[in-house]
Image 1: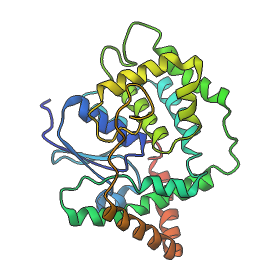
Image 2: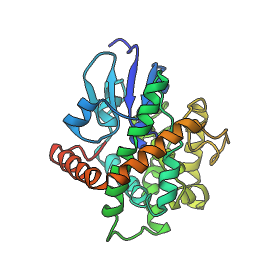
Image 3: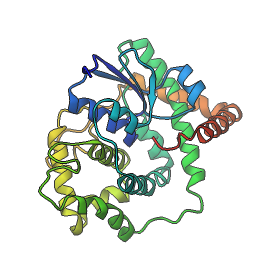
Length: 283
């Protein structure tokens, strides 16, 4: 199939699945745009999910693996998918422990829409997905035990063991879907630093995995949304945050979400139920 001319991706770059698609597009050299809020028609039909992508003028696609396969990458093996989900949940379900830090860090995300007016609008309305995931994580993490350092190491060891051969990447000689999704996870860990990032950086048993992170970081050193840049070798400059005016619109949207709490809460329940019924929990 001919390479796409342009791909529009919708979602927040804190999401490992959004990052995986962005990395895949950069690997293929495909022109693309990231906007933080999907079209209302997509939200109405599918709920709050990310990433959502449109290849040229085609239909909107959901799920990072499906999007990457459409771009020419391979499917992920079932064992790798399960290991990826375990690594994801161990970090994702702890991201709201620092509530102020959660909201503050999300304010830095940039929107790539070419229109300044639309960017401001997107920064205002993207607080609904942030509010949505903030509530889902906060309530979903209740009753869950916090993984120990040993448990985190064991989860990462699955991928470390896959690097035991001569291949430079998990997918072979070049990054494939599993590399892109796992490196997307690294971006999530670095966007709000926590125990998963610390274990990856410091634990002596994960040296081979750190070597892989370094190889991925070198390969994607021109990726403008590389949250891992200052945390792993080769050290690179930190990402450029959203502009001050854009962050003002973000915080105005955050205030609006909390002022309209009864309506916002009902919307979260409605869309969470819709996503569950459609079986779209994994992205």
